[in-house]
Amino acid sequence: MISFLQTNAEKEIRKWLNQHFPVLWRYCLILTGSKTSANDLAQSTSLKSLEKHKQFKAGSDVDKWLFKIAKNIWLNELRSQAVRRGTGLHNVDEIELTNGTSTSESVLEANLLINNIMQLPEAQRIAVGLVYVEGFSYREAADLLDIPIGTVMSRLSIARAKLSNRRDASKVRML
Image (cartoon, rainbow, N blue to C red; front, side):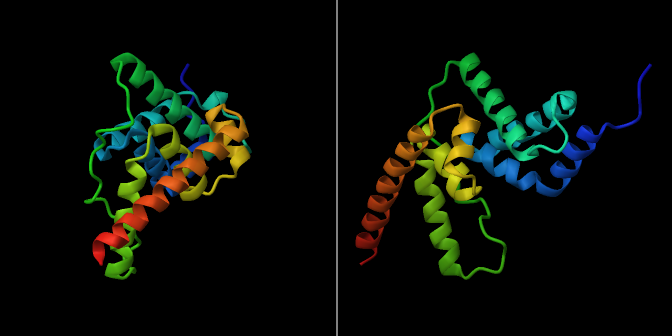
């Protein structure tokens, strides 16, 4: 017998997805480096979360649970294709990064920053996305990625140095 009643967990997941889907999509973009792949991964994550809603503990953090699902789906995809990511990412110039009220200068800066982030190796790119884009603490990012907090801190430190060097190089070219 099929039940048409939604559990609290399923209701919570559906509500989060309806209100915050762009957050999941951004994380998927950070994982994949491709707008098209991010769309596919976000959809797959949404479907899998609804299929597995009984595994979600109502009242816990939906976003963290969804991010783990997305990460696992992506890792399985990489394994199945035997693809190594870290270079050759798609350019994301066409992606709207601002809320529409920004100045053209801030839009250019945002585009430059996201392009520089997308050029980072996958591990650094994901750490930057979780901590600086989505606002997770170092501990939360470490838990999501199943790595020690020191590894997150190291990846962020290296990524900050690379981004700073790229920003400085861009400023010199503009002069």
